[in-house]
Structures are given as C-alpha cells and as structure tokens.
Length: 266
Length: 352
Image 1: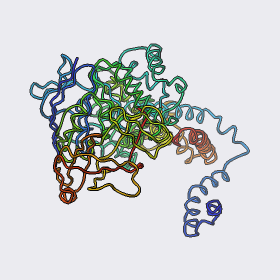
Image 2: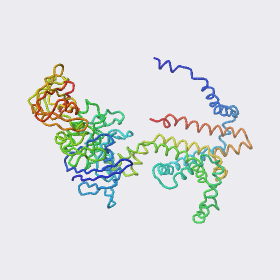
Image 3: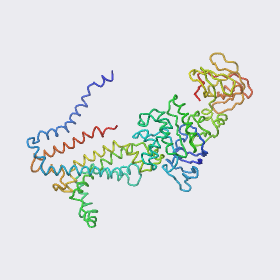
Image 4: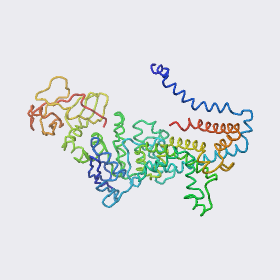
C-alpha cells in the first residue's frame, strides 16, 4: 500500500520545471513546422518530381548506409573491443571523430581522399574509371562516414559488457572464434546491435553537410530530402516546409515503430 | 585414454603448480577452499588459459606444452566442461543449448537436435526442451549444463562445483544423477569441489588443493584417516558412516552402536556425517542432555595446530577435535579410558 501511495507523490518542481523547458526545445519547433505548413496544397507540393526523387533517394541511401555500417562496423567494433593492438586508442578516437566533426569538414576530407585528384580516388579512377563523388554511391559513402560511428560506439560498448565466460563456454563446446561471435556474442548483444543500426540509419537519413560537399546536389542522383529542403528554403518556403514534414513523418514513424520492439531490452 | 597433466600457471601473487593423473573411467576430485586455484585448473585443462609451464596430455594427444610450443585451443580439445555458473545460453532454449556443441562441430541443425534429444531424454529433461534457461530451476539448469557438455562426447569431463548452487533438498537427487552419468563416461573425470561430501561420494581419488598446490592425495578413506594438514583435518575430517535410519534411530552398518539424530523424517539407507568438533570427550559419564553417549578408549592423539585430533577406539572409531588445552586437561594418551558424546542435532544424515 505504501508503495502505491508513494508512486502518486508529486514529482519535485525543481525537476519538473527544467524538464518542461527541455521538452519545449523539441516540441516548439515541431509545432511551428505544423503551423507553418501549407495544408491546402500539401498534396501537390509533396508529390512533385523533386520531392519524390529526393524521398526515394533518401530512403535508399540511408538504408544502404545503415547496412554498410553494420557490415563494416560490427567487425570494427569487435576489433576495438577484443583485440589489443598498438594504436587502438588512436583508431577509436578516429572512428568517433565524425560524431563531433562538422559534416562539411568530413565531406571535404572525403573529397581529398576519394575525389578525382584524391589520394585514393585518382589512382582508382585511372585504373577502373569509377569515381565516387557526385554519384549515388558518393551519397552512401558520405552517409556511412557520419553514421557508422554511432553503430561502432553502441556495439563496442555492448561487447565490452558481454560476459566472456559465455564465449569461453561456447569454445569448449567446439565453436571457433568466428562461430562464437556469430552464434553467441551477437545474439547476446542483439538489442544493442539493433539500436546501433537504427541510430546509424536515423543519422544517415538526416545527413546534409558531408553529402552536399562530397556528392553534390543533383536532383534524382544525389539530392536527398535534407538537400531538397535546403534548396527550397531559398526559393519556395512552402515546399521546404512540406518536404520537412515528409522527413519528420518518415523518421517519427520508423523510430516510434522500432522503439517498443527493438530499443527496449527483452 | 587417461589424463596426465602437470600444470604451472603464474599470476600476480599466486602460483598454481600441480600434478594430476586421472586414469580412464575413474573420477578424481580436486578438493580445496576458495582461491586455492580450482577454477584456474579448469581453465588450464579446458584451454581457456594457457599454462606457463608443465604439460597436458590427454590420451595420446599433447594439448598444451609450452616447452615445445604446442597449444591446442579449447574448440579443438575433447574436453567437456560443466561450469560453476553453468553459462547456459539465454538466447537459446534447452534443446538448442544441448544441440549447440554438435551443431558447431559440423552436424546440420536436424541431426544436432537429434543428438541433443538423446541426451535430453537420458537426463530426464524431456518436458523442458522449449524452456529458456531463465525459466529453469537450479537443479534443472544443472542437468541441462551436463547434457550440453556430454552431447559433444568429450574424452575428459570437467565438473566445476556442480552442486554448489543447488539447494540441499535437490542436492542428494542430483548427486545420484551425477554419480550415474559419471560412471557411464568412459574417459577421465575431474570433479572440482569445496564440499568433502561430494568429493568422497563421487570420486575414486581425492586431491586436496591448497594455495595452488596439492597437499594430499588418496582415497577418501585415506584422507579422512590421516589428514596431512589442518585444513584437511577440519574440512575433510568429517566422520562418515553408513547406517539404516528409522524414526530418528540410526543402526550403523559396521559398528555395534545405535545413534540418535534430530532428523526423524529421513528413513532407509543413509550416510551419517559427524563433524570431529561435534564429538565431546569427558573423563566421566556426562549427565544431562547428550543422548548419544558411550564409553570408549583413545586409539591415537595427534596435534594439528589449533586443534588436537583424538581418534577413538571401539565401539565407534570416530575422530574428535578438541582444543590442545582440553587434551592436556583430560590427560589423553593412547589407551586412556574416556566417555564420548554427540548431540542428536549434530548427527547429520543424508539418503545414501
């Protein structure tokens, strides 16, 4: 009984007041967007070629970037968590750098590496004719660059928390290190892996700076939703607001749908 | 197929150095207090921790030999381990936990599950195949861990404190299950325990491990009779007697004496445990409460540091631990006539 009554106690104002201000930081801009929305001709505005192209490209590239982040980021996180090699701390810092770096700087760095006259890009173009910047794969590369750190950090943290005895038990049952990772470790950290993948996807979907710097802003090829918003803001505010609403809706639907099923531990 | 091991593992402030030979088809027990190096021994034999010196040979295979650079990783050793914390996989049900070994060593899922089902049946786990480890009782989880280890058909079987986390009521039953399956296993078996009862009931040979070294080896009887150190005396010196119980009365199998116990519910064949410190000695017949009182003679007196161990003669050759000053006061020498008594509450019985 006491516990139940205790639950009904009022939370202290010293916490409620700053929490309310904190919530307003998120709620007010979103509400403003809804107020400013051109509801009367919303349909036409978001079914224009520009918007449809950008939406399709955004969904495709963000999912590809999330997939690439998982495929490359999980082994990288494993290496950082489990193998003691010289320069590990430095590599860990480099991997997390895109989380704090302005994306524009990241995009510029990508250009110097993979651009036509870049460190890697030049020789690769000479040999194969393939050029990464200003292509769909350039968008994916820029997205992966900013998104993968979220996956690596989440998964590495989870790996550090795994009870190694379970892995050792699996080894005594005949499992090779790779099998242990696949059949024991990854299932044990599945909730964190999913959370990391969703975070990476969300970051990729919203990516702007690195994309516009490295991949440009070509409608249908490299113009993602955030880029379309940016371009429209200059010329046609109503369309910008309409595209923003699309972006907000897609993100919200996915995050809310996944939150209950994936983010909470079983 | 026997185990021949000389293990040297060095840690900061600790060194393990022991010789262990276990013939095929026999069970050895490693008995020792916490921190003696028991778990390190398991890890070294399983290949989780490489040894710093010595050699591990199982049958004709050298598993670990730092001198010649041989180290076989755990997944390629035919060593099955039941870990102290069991370490069942929470993301798999009972069936797939047991099928894990067979499936990672090459069998397809269906075939691996068929193997698992055989062991599950053998260990009476049929009703639990769909359960997750978190839904099992301690005794059930223990049997799953045993089935999982046996399903890989190991040559060496390692059991690390298999009964430590089991409640007393289940322990007797599980000990019998363990005993049966240990007997069925052809290879060498090693039981790690801090409980002398488990060691004496399950093992053919007992090795006492203290501070990284084996301080005594022998059969349970030998160790009990002649404890080499104060630890063994205190821990392994318990008097174990076979008896038949009925309503709190114990007819001893090999001695002409009836003891009384406070446990009036257990009946049939039992194992009686009396701790040496529970045996009181008096120079004349004690009056008052002790219901188990008899006159006897002193067979041997042995100072073991903090206690003096007195071995009694007929009708019941018990070990009694008393303080050195009490021994002096009683003037005990071999042949002294004295009275012995044990409270009914100090006479423990367990179904044998």
